[in-house]
Image 1 (cartoon, rainbow, N blue to C red):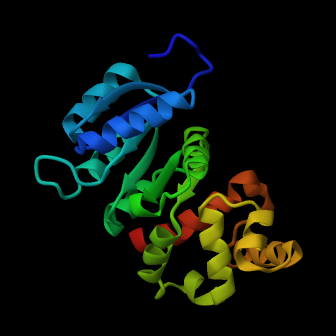
Image 2: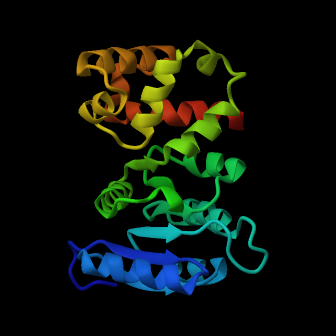
Length: 224
């Protein structure tokens, strides 16, 4: 673990040596202390128990079966060491386990698709946001998860534009960023967000976590 208490500590878990080492180098070059880099879920759990990192960057499919070991390990980490954030970085959207992972708490989780992480600065910002207790969800992940819950009442009440705003919120976009992405005014964004909160029965006393809870409430409908 880093001797600098202000430095972010990370464990990287990916069975691809090239990707794993590439992530280690990228993070190290940007002032992040990679305390371990492992190739399977068992090693990941052992490493977290030993190092207690701030964050784990986890692939979904790892040995031995290359199905969902990484996500199941992420769930185990959140259950055993809730202070350790989990950022899934994968080529796939595993809907069932993704829903469970995102429903484990109000923050400290993320799910990004590898082939959509094109901007290093955005990736690092997402990583730091998750490590700080926030969320970072790829728009495609949100789209697939929400599409599977369209039968629920809260989702049925959302307009298509409100769904787009919710997806952008899940990615950690600010109101200004959402406005720029959707080519609408910030006032319109604020109105859509207010409508989303109202339709999900998220009252002002929920505080700053309402943006996160707005996403988790939808995902929770499917779990129920």
